[in-house]
Image (cartoon, rainbow, N blue to C red; front, side):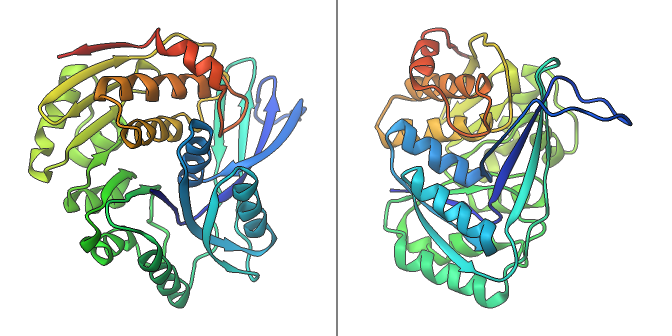
Amino acid sequence: MINTITLNPAIDHIIYLNRFERDITNRIRATRITMGGKGTHVSLNLKLMGSPSRAFGFGFGATGKKIIDMLREGGVEPYFVYDENGESRTNYLLVEEETKHATLISDKGPLPTDVQVEDFCRMMSETVQPDDYLVFSGDTSNFPDPGIYNKLIDLLSDRKLRVFLDASGKTFESTIARSPFLIKPNTDELSTLLGRKLVSDAEVIGAINELDRYHIEIIAVSLGGDGSIVRAGDALYRVHPPKVNVYNTVGCGDCYLGGLLHGFECGMSIEDTLRYATAVSAATAESALSVFFDVPRSEELMNAVKIKRL
């Protein structure tokens, strides 16, 4: 079973504009409300792919209850520590339809108490099973215990879990030291880790090789619209995505991670897994939402994904 963790889930309030301009009145063309938060995005997309998952997180107030309800409506069972006090965060996503720019304005969100964190750890310990997948999504810098990911890895160390990490900054740096099964940094996150800017494919490949000391089975470096470079064991792949009509890039990385998880869960080959994950991510870029994608469209795009073994 796949277990996703979203410590600070949100509701995404998407605002569609023709074009955003500063210091004037901007007229809204339309708005949508959808799920926010990286791990919850992964879980909802996994359900669409046909892979069940458990979604762990915290919920506060009416917004937290709405998040829990939206997960259930999407076919995902939430395992949340809930408190009616406080209010889970709402993010605002500005989508400019003329320029194709998407800007996320993210709220900080409430901080769980020490007791709530302990309740969360207890719930995970009682629920997660041996050989499960454990997915850490998002930064923990504003969490009461910024080392919570490592605490959970230690807590569940006897379960022989496959750990998937999609994080940034100090969270990324500290958690890769526990040798997760897979990491999914983008070039900015990898550049920050190594202290230098990575631009070319050769520089990214060199950076991947520098991570040998962490003993990570799969390193998937996202290059945004240029695809990815992935090392799986001793094999290295350059993945080129299909050309699509980009509408909104927010959520593409979460869908890509979901595609990787689905591929491993279904026993796909590594190349088929990369092809699938890239296609669903590309289909997400064509969507007006920050979660979900057009399944038939993703199937069409799979044949247009180009993979070269380096």
